[in-house]
Amino acid sequence: GGENPQEDRRRRQSLQAMPKKEAPPPRPWTDDLEADLQRILTVGEECISSGELKKLILAKGRGTEKYAEDGGADVSPRIRLYDGFEPSGRMHIAQGLLKSVNVNKCTADGTHATFCFWVADWFALMNDKMGGDLAKIVTVGKYLIEVWKAAGMDLTNVEFRWASDEITGHADEYWPTMLDVARRFNVTRIKKCCQIMGRLEGSLTAAQVLYPLMQCTDVFFLKADVCQLGVDQRKVNMLAREYCDAARRKHKPVILSHHMLYGLKKGQEKMSKSDPDSAIFMEDTVEDVERKIMNAYCPTEAEEDPAAADDGGPSEEGDAGRESMQLVTDTLKNPILDYVQHIVMSPPDATFTCATASDPDGMTYSDYGEVRSDFLAGKITPDQLKRGLIDSLNLLLQPVRDHFANDETARGLFEQVREFKRQSTVSQTKPADEVPKVFRLDLVDKGVVKSG
Image 1 (cartoon, rainbow, N blue to C red):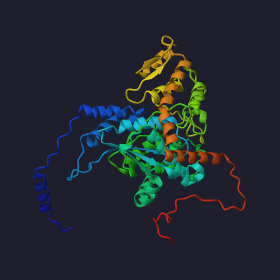
Image 2 (spheres, helix red, strand yellow; image 1 turned 135 degrees about the horizontal axis):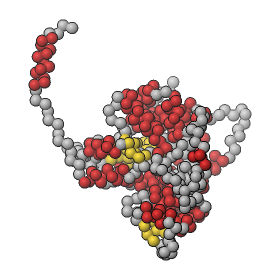
Image 3 (cartoon, helix red, strand yellow; image 1 turned 90 degrees about the vertical axis):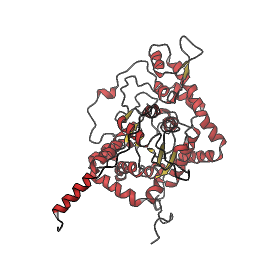
Image 4 (cartoon, rainbow, N blue to C red; image 1 turned 180 degrees about the horizontal axis):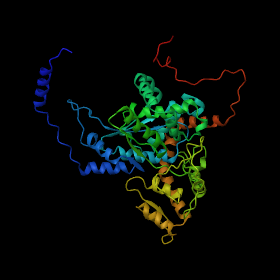
């Protein structure tokens, strides 16, 4: 109402006639940027998508630094990668060593990237870890950070954010986002994501159904450009991309999914914290490593998987965690070769040494493909492969053992975590009249909300 249509048309024509501000020329794609891209891509068994990652590196990566006028800190946006972990007790070798290598690749000097670890203490609470005791969960989280420091993770461009503190301190931002995620998807779609917990669908609690919704929210709350989690988390990361479509958010997170190590026993698609002999753990002794590896499954040729023959699809209450954790077809499924490839030879310029039929004193390999082909050709026996792996793993784990033996803070945390494990094995019988203890984050104690 009330405005002159001719005057309005003249104003629009005048605006269109004004010279447009020229867009800055596109940044050239250099050899250094290509090296950053290729190095980061080696972290993942799958990247969705490499084209988006390239654009991200151009927009925020190497060479985009802008410093404050006083010559202070870099104020330009950095590439943000994220992974979340539940502090739930022991740390297996993939979470310790492989994660350290991957973080170092993603945040190498000059890459202009920050890796954010979301310490998912509230998520561990939802999953009933450590008996639901948040204080214990926080202690375990601190212990895991000590393991990474000792394992060689460069923490220069790493930040740790604690879910309990961050969600409580920014509730006005976190919960509206989560509610918006929740209203965009039906329950069936969310239950498909429950593979992240490896839970039977029929046994999911209501809190565990919230878990994928909150994990999806984390991506946006942490302003993550790249979700750098395991293949087992792929479905919930895809949920975040679907949410961007539904909510018309322009920038979808890139998904860079790392490999899931096989369990050491036959037929184990992945390691299990509940089965100590299914994996090498970061606190394992020299003797533990030798026993587990020497007893491990080590086939020299592919065997038919009985589970694959009975592929009638998941039942209505099927185990969401039973699906294959592998994106690359592998009919051999040899965990010893898997460890050689993804643990020993994953760092840049890494080598693997083991005895061979032609060189009993040991041959050093710089290419994993040659190790595999020599093993399959019978030039390396299963025993020789295992002995070489034992030596390599103990070399990698020794700095961690030394740190927890010599550093007082680290040793204290380890003793506490070990005591928690002992307590968890004790019978939880309580008098009938005892009021059950409820573990929660007390917002009054933390000063977030006023009493009354």
